[in-house]
Length: 317
Image (cartoon, rainbow, N blue to C red):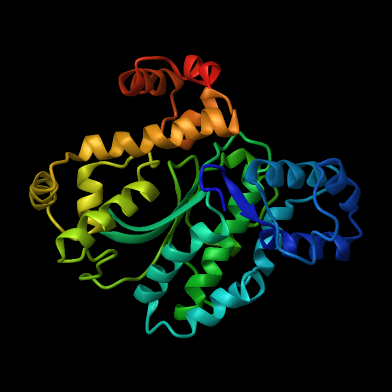
């Protein structure tokens, strides 16, 4: 799997294919227009995520209703990924399940980031994709992902559990006619990321850093590679994720001869270069992928990293 390209497994679409067939919605001709492999509903293929989202949006544009919401209600971990469901059976509690989820999700959709976070005294299971809310198909994908995470939580909290509150990135006007109380009675829209409020112990620790010096910096690099693309990624956030203090994290980084900002920028720059040249996507889309909602801020950052603008770098590649 090429991690420089935002790709998703077609297993993500199986529930949609079943729904389309059940409702008599023609989708195979659309799949051919997108040059999807024959028999896509039977095997596993890795395809560009934006193609899959555009495909879903195209099919749904010819139907009525909110398909992502309806399919999401049918979603379960067992149907989505039997292998992951089996692995969850070996998790002692939700904390170990979340650790497994954080490890597995990049293998299923490398454009999705999952993390737990304590916000205003309450724990949330957070998620964010690499695409902005104005992309075609975004709302459908976010509904589906939110319900899938609800299914994950119910593996530990019971089949009738609902989150006390939910955060969604989509705009509220896209929910017209949707009975979204089936997800939660308290949903906030236009948020920076999606999230489900979850019951976790006060002493819950999301990530435990190794004591060994070499393993410690390797783990830090892995965390930066995953989370540096988040807009709110800063040293305080990372320290909180790892249950350590800002001062301790800074000291340990200095012991390895690096600074937080340097590591963050290295990972963001590497991601941006891959997207601009290997994927040849626009600087605007690249900015969102790398944690910038504003193109001018991304341009300034990229010039600071490379000495040239993203457009100039893309042309030179």
